[in-house]
Structure formats: C-alpha cells, structure tokens
Image 1: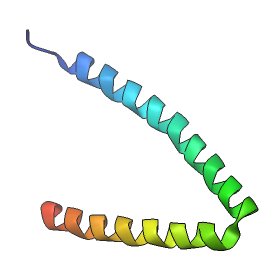
Image 2 (image 1 turned 180 degrees about the horizontal axis):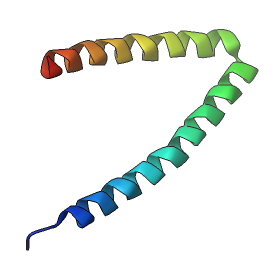
Image 3 (image 1 turned 90 degrees about the vertical axis):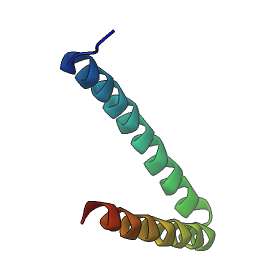
Image 4 (image 1 turned 180 degrees about the vertical axis):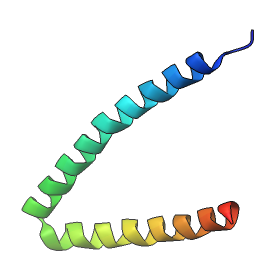
Length: 64
C-alpha cells in the first residue's frame, strides 16, 4: 500500500501536537526544579546543554 503525502502530513501534524504538549510539560518540570532546588537544577541543565551542543555539532557534520 502506497502512502500519499496527506498521510505523511497527517502523521507529522500528530507528532507536532504531541511535542507541543510535551514541551509544556518540560517547561513545567524546569520551573519546579529551579523553584525547589536551583543549584542542582542548574547543574543538570548545564549537563543537558553540553550534551545538546555535542549533538548539534554532530548534526552539522551531517548537514554540511
């Protein structure tokens, strides 16, 4: 069964909506972490930032 572009766009829209909701959850979690334990939250965020930077560098290798 061949899938058409409408099918793909429909699936992408569903993913977009789920990611939108999940981003709100992440931001709520981030607020809570900094409210309850800012030093520890900052440490975790710095680790996340470092790993995201490493991922970005690898993506650059794929896109250039």
